[in-house]
Amino acid sequence: MKPEDVRVLPYHLIVGQEDLRLALEIAYVVPAIGGVLATGQRGTAKSTTVRAFAKMVLGRLPVTLPIGATDDRVLGGWDVEKLVADGTPQLRAGLLEQAQAEGGGLLYIDEVNLLDDYLVNIILDAASGGVLPVEREGIDEQARPVRFTLVGTMNPEEGQLRPQLLDRFGLVAMVADESSGETRREILRNVLAFDATLDGQVSSLVDQARREDESFAAQLAQARSLAPLVHLSDDIIGLCADIAGSFGSAGHRGDLTIAYAARGLAAMSSTTAVRPEHVARVAPLALAHRRAGSESGTIEPWNEDEKDRLKQLVDAAS
Image 1: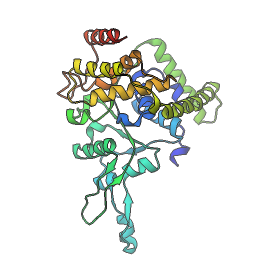
Image 2: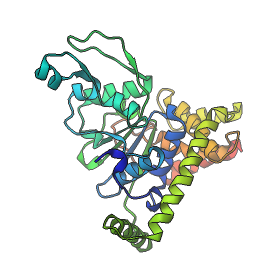
Image 3: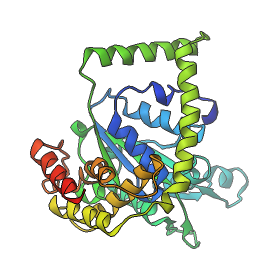
Image 4: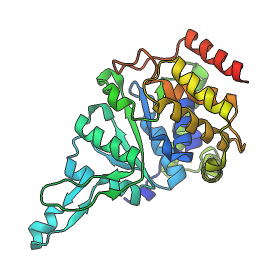
């Protein structure tokens, strides 16, 4: 079955997961964000949300990097089957190039924390730099340009990513299970309605969600075109830098990510200038893994003191 033929739960039937959905939407609107990491315990619909989003904006599933993938499979290399069959040396594109060509610029890695650090580093380098290095034995080629957004999911109970690798993800969304009875009932109702359509039943709920997906995908495409035109004033730039500095973000990726993400959120709101409230909403996603205390690779939820400090900084700039 082709990726475009696979039926997945419509994006508008996803319940909760506001941070993950917002992070995916912003990373699509502003690809320079550098990717999204979703971290949370198993069974919290991380993979389902990513696939539903990709199906909505791309019309197909994302290119997915499997656990145990070799560097040949990721970076590309000789087509061994072709070489064995008729002796013809022919290069085969790796998953990074396939993500650009076939996956609409989206590469998905489930359980990214279980992937070899060497491969994760190469993938993150290519994602942030837009260049795929070709330094393999017997292959003499120039580095090739690649453009894709990396989305990774992980269960922190199964191991952490090194802080140096965490920092390369633009936004991090912490995902938890939904505890309220009403929300859990809504999740169950939506999934049962969708599953019934796989057996040929008609569901007005699913049909309506698919129509909403089509409309929202068009809105995101429009926001993606608008984003480069959204103005970042000196005051807003100062606010982004002050927030990143106040929370101990090492280097300058945090500052830049907040600015890019706020610009994306403003574009999604059809506004032509970033406002303090845009910065306030995206800062936790940009700094979850960069603020002081995350040096060990452990990502903790924002506590009340941190939320108050962020609010004070934003209020002072409003």
